[in-house]
Length: 313
Image (cartoon, rainbow, N blue to C red; front, side, top):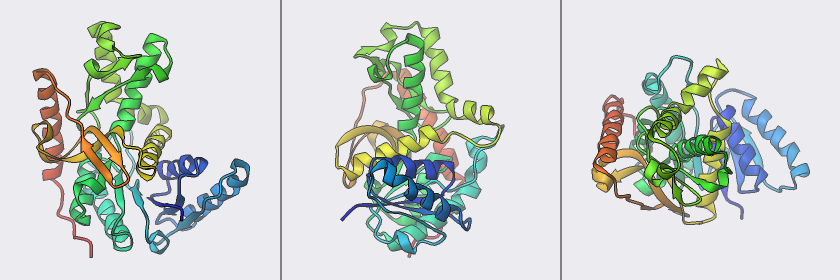
């Protein structure tokens, strides 16, 4: 029996995630959206591409959660998008309501699912999903670090004129302006970028990475990034469903790691079939630890401002 992945939100991020997943025949997909006809139309369009792709998976579109029953993974992308000049913080209360409702509806029908949260502000929305679902931390993950690391890798590769396959970039912290790229742990063919670039160049790339989402929002004028976020989600789904024990940077609920407790913060995580297998703790310098604490403080401020969601049940 094939695995089932529900994607809540059939906009650009959700639909493109479904596209990446069905292209690899990873799982059957259910697209859920409140807009009538949108998930159904996009699901049918994807289905009609599968004979050409040679993929035998099912894609279902729905305005309710009934078809999602028994999902192995529920991805929540639904929410109001960022607009030019809008910070992730501005989205807090409106998207907390959307994520809370989506979580309640999904976990009633898929009580054993793993939740992957994508809606911004990411780290705070993970906390909404955790409170609402009552799930253990192993089954509530945030997609941010995969995307942030990919952006950093892109800029490093272009700066040095090397293949992206040679680059491994590391990023910690909250998603957004307070992320903490780690140049010491970012390498090109195993060589730290601190050996390949001067400090000014690295700082320029770090700044661009931290503002990567805003850069795309400002270019598009209407809408935000979706190709790279969707591919990042698909990578997490693939690693979990195939029990690959791969280390990916994800937002997880820390319980003392990195000196932080009861906050969703982006850190390297080993993922397996049950979600989080282990948090990988890197040895940080005093400066890096201070930057991570600053990032955590920004996340805590958002969490402290959250309305209390109703529990699932």
